[in-house]
Length: 261
Image (cartoon, rainbow, N blue to C red; front, side):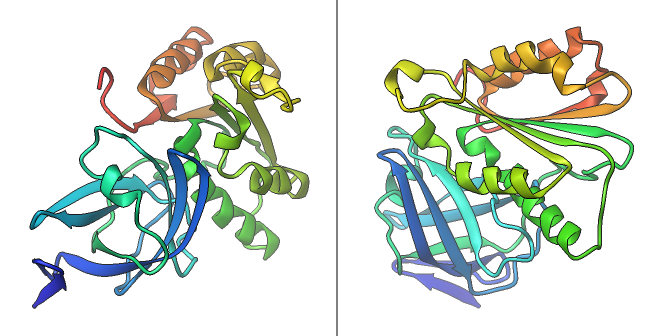
């Protein structure tokens, strides 16, 4: 049976209709949406959903890491506008009530198996790269509150942005840090001269990582590092962690676009 969307009709075994039910704008090129999918869309933290809109009779799709916990009723996505991109210029105008198309199958191996009981975890992200970590942290926080899960290890989240208004989940992460004894949050701003009210850490993510690597206690054989976001950050952070003695297999990554593009 086809799923209708304007001029496009799609295979309902592969696609499901969705509706934007909430939108939150952070900047002219950054926004968060929540989408209600008209079909079950099971996933685990670290996976991505593929969404699309028809353009001139052709369905344009892109994958986006899921922010929401698998237990939440709506699908939450953190999106950056790419002016020359194929999809985001068509997503950007969509407000509450607008229709979308979603693939019924989520994919991705990032964060599979996390958290690992015997390891500290260092999550490193730039801007929208916080999405998979937020999904996992929401799930772990709920399980910890209900006594379903506990840990004696640490989870550290290091997130970088040019300016603080690009932190889509700053207050949520600060609240989790205050609540959870096993969670530390370290946001950093790389252009503090454009953000004079910011009083936190400053510098690029990889510089802050280099500065705090020893203090954070990320040691070979007892820690795993997860990198998500800008490919240059991932390359630099991986190099820092390798020079610190971590095995390559202890460093996992999720690039949001191919390097050089």
